[in-house]
Length: 420
Image 1 (cartoon, helix red, strand yellow):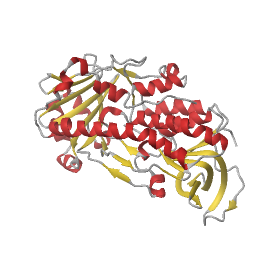
Image 2 (cartoon, rainbow, N blue to C red):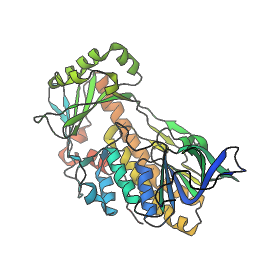
Image 3 (tube, helix red, strand yellow):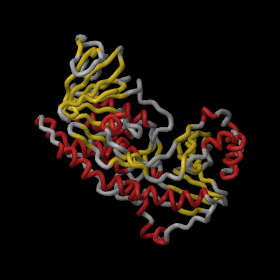
Image 4 (cartoon, rainbow, N blue to C red):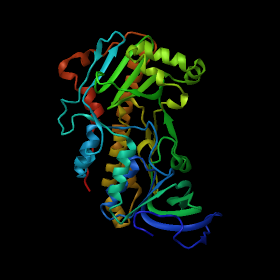
């Protein structure tokens, strides 16, 4: 077996008493992480750097999925700097967003907060394809012999003994495999299989919108940064991707099928009504396959853990796309998890109280940002979709307080620091 990967064929085949499945092989590690998104990848690297035996299981064969979150807020970049990775990460192709500009259909600026006033070495949002970020983090982790990655690992079962989760069983690479661990981490996203298997329920919160994502060319005279346009009961977000715009067309919750039924020509017309400068470019939308539908969700799990198991990232708290903070809160979860669990893992004495400590530190920041997102959705976005005048809170019009939204989005409450 190579130190950084497993094919599923190396160990001798055997039958396990605990399951009726024919187990091809089994592996013992300190920590088994299910889900190769930002939370799982960063946590794997943090643990592997300390010589902790960690296996990362990812259901897909690679990390490349379209229209995943691509925004690294200042807090995430500061964590990368604390890990000694920021300079090399920024050598990869990316764009930087220093401001957000929301305009009415008449072009008048409604709100224009800026990240440039934040006290940080990274006063901007780094926009980088998530696959590029994940490949970078995993490549770093592979430098450590205690790290193993299994792609194409479809986790199907938890191993539970005397009420304690002892690992997982997954399918892939020709059959069933077993991974036993001191701690199993569920970092497998909004539709978490581990959350379902553990019987930990997600509680939904309000989400009055869905989003259609697509890309159109960005021309040299177009504005830079993150731009929004509202009017006539519609709202779009334009994310600067250098030569392209990544565009989010926001629709009321549950109306996607109506939009599909109306047809692409109607959608193009609606886009041009709010973005008249895109009249020619929008003709490039010729097929629904060019448009990705995101069903916006927001939810939280009351308890993130069971003995031997911890949920982090979207598995524990699904974020709305408002503010583009999902990746950053997942990375912060990973840092706090590593801070609390590294020494217990080394000592082979992980307690339930160690798992609870992770939730205790992260619960208030995540619930706070979800509350902030809900306010934006219900007061700003809902008003825009209902074609009502947008009235920003008076305090946001005061120059001295305009940095509050960038500070909340960029850092949140109590951003953690890498301690290990």
